[in-house]
Length: 331
Image (tube, rainbow, N blue to C red; front, top):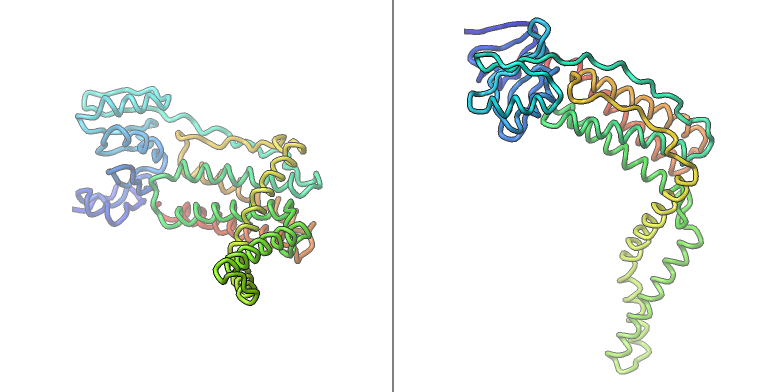
């Protein structure tokens, strides 16, 4: 017997295991936490995820005559009630063990305020974009935990890629080893020459020791030592560049008072998944706007432009993945 309570379908796996129920009144999101998984109403994704850490449930609904409810198993009803109260909910337990509660109304969207795209300095403006992207990444990680949908995995991966590119752009901007185009600065050249010379000297010294002072073998050993350290020299140069650039960027940003721009707080666990992800998309779009402004101020051949372009592309793909997930009949 097929039961359709509404227009929103369950996933194929849950249709096979829910006793004929194939569709409900609210959009479904397939959630997996610990050893439990099921389709749940999207307005209760984080609530159910919190309950599943301590209890098991048989059903739930985000809006039943204006109130939500969760039906835990008989042996875990006390733990489930405690978990719901821990979220700040006023829970009513019925005689049948159903836990009913009212979800708070969603808070109004907070404006982003003034994003400092007009302050002129690359690092300062890019730090504002990075903070927005970091906030979006944190929200995606927190509020899509347990959602294994391919689009959500794509969104999380693309935001992480954008974070990496933004960091790379900032570090190249302040690097004392490399110029924007990637060529070595004088300090980088001296650093590599010192390491190559050390490798050549060690190789020659070892060859001289083994060959009882032979000049020919010392020459061969020096060349061998030079070749042997070429790859490690590149790795050491990149490592030294990364460490010094991170310290220098942190010092510069402290001087600029980059903390003056604080992104707004995004909604918490009691807000429906679609609203939270809409806010994440808004944050991502704001970061993309900043990146577009900054990229126009740089010479097109600079590495920073490539980093910003790659970050913008990753954020665009993350935003599209979230949009497709939100528009799908089920999550």
